[in-house]
Length: 109
Image 1: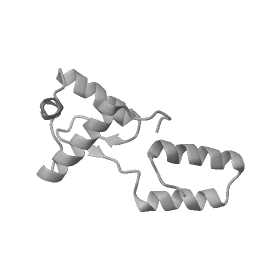
Image 2: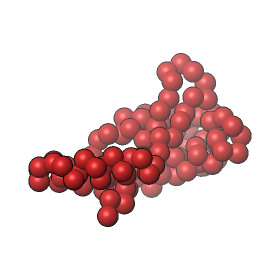
Image 3: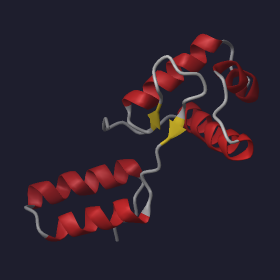
Image 4: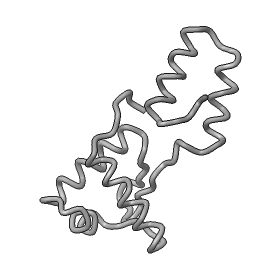
């Protein structure tokens, strides 16, 4: 995952994907995302999707329809793994883990 925070639009896309998938049992099409968020074009949706995939918060199967999956980095197991690793690491590694946790929005306290 890159060390960039998500933009408001990217967060909106993720929220929409999560809600749509929970309600329907499958992910929305790019056109449904465009209409649901009032975006100007399908290419704008595609750009947001590609950026989210590159940031590691969204997964998609190339060439497959409705294959978008929001990856949840806030699972308790993820937080626990970070905490365990932080107990036995160098100060430099700890700083990297803390920064990664901050980027992912994890509560490591």
